[in-house]
Image 1 (cartoon, rainbow, N blue to C red):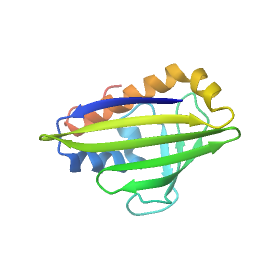
Image 2: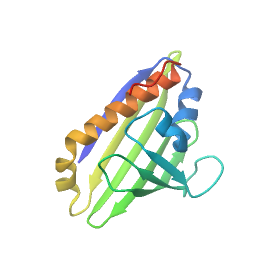
Image 3: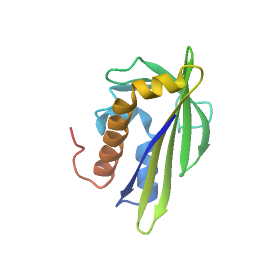
Amino acid sequence: MEQSVTVDVAAPPERVWQVVSDVERWPAWTPSVTTVHRADDGPLRAGSRATVRQPRLPESTYVVTELTPGRSFTWVASAPGVRTTARHDVEPLGDGARVRLSVTQSGPLGTVMGRLYRGLTDRYLAEEAGGLKAWCEGSPAPS
């Protein structure tokens, strides 16, 4: 089950990528993420691991499975019966950027978990898109 949101950001794609790929700073601009701790240093890359804590969800460790510098990254967290895949795409759009954030639940319990958490996932995607837009455009992130 996939859920997604798309937002246009009035900031250069390079700026948007810098913000979205600096995962440890996400709590500064989105209330949907409490903490992110990287297990490695340096720029985000394939194989990078991060432990993410979000309100109302169990702590999860994500592993970056795909990364195109300046454009996109995908990371995956696994738990018994469910695999969560989150994708972050940044594409140039005139003087700004279009960002697409998506979450897919798969595995034997993926559809059930996707339905159970559908409202929360939609809310978190909206908060992340809105917070990213506000942060990149230079205004305070919504609370």
